[in-house]
Image (cartoon, rainbow over all chains, first blue to last red; front, side, top):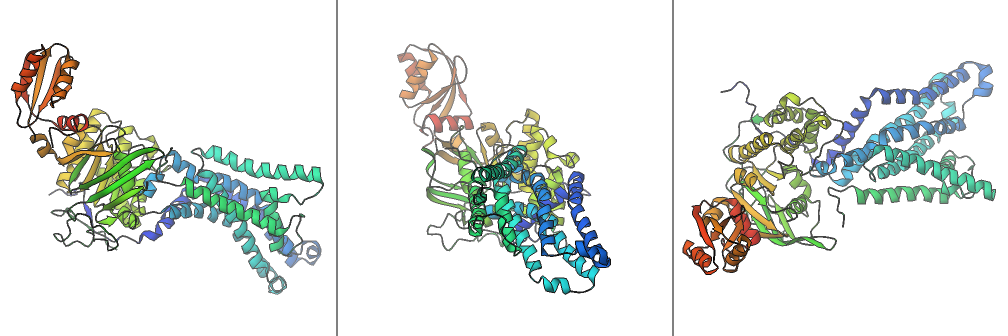
Amino acid sequence: MPIHDQSYRRYTGEKRPVQSAWTVIARAGLMSFLSRKAFLGLLLVAWIPFIVRASQLFLASNFSQAATFLAPSAQTFRDFLGQQGIFVFLITVYVGAGLIANDRRANALQLYLSKPVTRAEYVLGKMTVLATFLMAVTWLPAILLLMLQIAFSGDFSFLKANSSLIASVTLHSLLVVIVITFGMTALSSLSRSSRFVGILFAGVLIFSDAMFNALRFITGSTAISWVSIQASLDQVGDVIFRQAPRHQTPVAVSFLVLLAVVVISASVLERRVRGVEVVA
Amino acid sequence: MPLAHEPVPVTRYPIPGLIPDSRLPTPDSRDPVSPDPSSVVSLDDVTVVYGKNEALSGVAVQFPPGAVGLLGPNGAGKSTMIKALLGFVVPTRGQMHVLGLDVRHKAQEIRARIGYMPENDAHIPGMNAVTFVGYCGQLSGLPPVDAMQRAHEVLYYVGLGEARYRNVETYSTGMKQRIKLAQALVHDPDLLFLDEPTNGMDPKGRDEMLALIHDLGHNKQVNLILSSHLLPDVEHTCDHVIVMDKGRIATQGPIATLKGQGGSVFELRIKGDLPVFLDVLRAEGLEAHGTDEDVMRVLVPAGRSARDVFSLASTHGMQVRHLRPSVPTLEDVFVDAIEGGGRAHP
């Protein structure tokens, strides 16, 4: 008898319920990006604004002279999330462009979908990868800032005065993450080239914003801000933080635009994520 | 959790009632039509339409346990059938059962119990071989530790043990074929779908792949369905064949039976116009196909003999220079099924 039989052997161990396949996909995706030095570098850079803001909170809490012009408010957190927009963009392009495009290039979809993995689980697993990293540069640092503020000041007076801040930060982060994740995942399913998808994503954001600015210049009004995805996110974000909307567009319209992005993206994913591509 | 591996059992053909195995198929109570319990796959009047083209036309067939070849020329509907069985393509009509489970209602349970080796190059990008196969094991329901151990074992089994830490994207075509087999095997499926498994392989690699498939089907008792347009592949690895043509089943049965039934095969060399004589033979109900400039193989149905061939040659002014009884091959069965409509093998 051989010491180790290298032939094919039966497996009689336990198998897990098939409903958790999306967690396997998400975990593999997260580990894949976290093992890249360039991506870790990007994540570190994305936390530099957090360090700056934390320093601001420290100074405001410990030096009365600084508190006069550095004192935090709800606006501080709104501004912080706005500043993170550039990192949201970079991480979305870096992580999201290849999420499905690379699988399409390698014909991996038929492998995934020949396993006990539904199309919804596959998409959910892929979206979780991007959404997790986006939350890591929006919601997580914002909430940590809030906790640091409490720690530096030594009381809950700021939180009591801004009782809706945790909800606002969470809601705003979720809004950005959901809209961007749906949009990018849908774009990623449209091509086999992650490079093309990245350019397409940048193009959609920049083109819609450029169109808004051009129309604003022509009409002299910001009522047309709904043509820009970024402007719509800003508009709804202002309302979430209970601030005056920055554009003249009704908030409901901006919200409907963002909802439309999600619905259209879901529709694209439903059509594109299939085990076999039928060209009639 | 202990790693649960044990030697290969005596048999794993899923014949309900014969084997006390909880993983065997259980009849689906929602099924209006129960499949034949002795078959691993059954199709009943299945039609698949791509645009205006009917890729499968009312296919009704049962795949018995063991190694079954799905044979047919390119475009016959073999891959479409497999994709329909996997749930990738939804038939416009008909019912399909895999391991006793209805494909429409139990697709997930079926996929947990089958392995699929696709026809074209396919892998998960950015992974080395062992990570890729382990990942596929996890997707199929194995715990991470077991999946990784199975990945190592299966990669050794398919001959990629030494290359298991290389990125899959750097693999040669033959290695990619092997790793597709490994990912299909890692979770120990009850049924394997192999779609053109020797595509693009060099002769040595092809022989090794066929040896693996033969081993799986005969020594490891894995049920498998091998789709191929290459007759030697099917003949070497399978016991049973289903021949498809233009979206329909042309013929089916055990290879030995198909080769041994329905008359004799002769190798014939003539002097004269070979294409004309081929037409003459076919018009007389003898299936024939040219194999060389002046050589043909003639399938003479039961009840007729070589005398009929001589008689026809004489009538049409052909000289028979050579006539030798030949051993029927799967190619004869295939040609008869595709070109002759199965006249020699009714």
